[in-house]
Image (tube, rainbow, N blue to C red; front, top):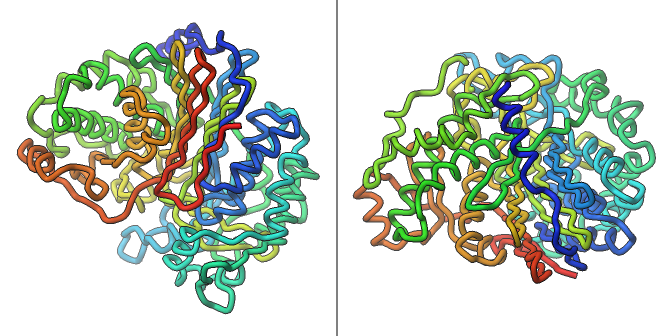
Length: 555
């Protein structure tokens, strides 16, 4: 703990407020044009980046129900320009008091995947509604009612879901059909809707109005909470009114470290992203990546990924309950030792690294990035985990419940839906928050600032890493979010890649080093990034072209 306090003290000495003039304009990049526009509507009404973040977050809950929503959780990473305050608002879901890991096992004692990802038992207590209220009250300028107005209008008047949303409904049709509330909302006439279908969600509009009028109590207490608990129990879950009433966001000190003369500010536990990002960049800081060819560089990046994900599996969990060696894992000295174990020409088999201790541990997440005219920054990643979460909609509420219980290590060593393993540090216990890969991040240099993040399940952290490295190489936000991607997560011991991420010659050279490659057909993630040249005042944004409706605007 002494070493952690020392690390935070050193981080506090680093420059965190901007000496340069504010940009005068704002930049927002999100996964949907309607959400980006909602953010600008609130800015035009006199709001700041944090009011806009509330508006964008709530609008995405309406127009991207497959990815996130008020039935899920979020991390809001904020930088307040006037005093340099930087904090992570942790709105991760929590496990109900009645949580019992054995409930997720089958008769043979093996993990029952259906129970962990589908139905009421898969859902943790949502945190996003609490975050909307907290961010508006503590960092915004406008009343919550004003910031939620665009989302309420979208829910009531309706919108045409894009092709990506319709595809996800098709993928989850069988599970959605199990639940009366979900099927009534997303399967009109019992079928997957076609292009041009207009989704109107008056129940969600009323739920958002309740939050706007009554704040935290509107969701977590009273008649609405009673309705939620009854609906979850009917769907096989184990929530109680006490679980909802006890929910609170946590403000946490971000992970802060230096890379190539820039300060990186990123998510702390219960996100594993910031620690893993620090570990990987600290390892890579010992190499001049610009002087290496693509194969040599990829090899070193993969070896850094391998080691960071190994430590993720062993050490990380809910910081309110688990003691973690944060200072050690983010230390340059620790990274130097890991770097020394990397052979420059040969892959390190994952099974040759020390195994995780036993015991000691969404693809459809969404992310948006904001810089406002005052220089405030917001990087927000939010999720219901898998597409449409648990595929449960409590009648009268209008939103899907998350399936974040699968992010716990429900059985030590058993991989979750993303193939990640864990042990006791991430075991499911009442009130605990499951380990996350969400990695909203700021990179702040002498003249430039980057705000970045992405969905992508276990690949989130490595995508953010690759985006940051590309930015240092000179890529603009649109280019870095569109680049082809690769990923390694310790186990399985495979470099997974997007299609055509490497040339045949590069694949052959990596295989000769001992790497195993697996090329997929589907693209990954949906990155959204904005940057600001504080010397020239230029703002730029990029929204991943892998999406259908993503929009980055500067105004």
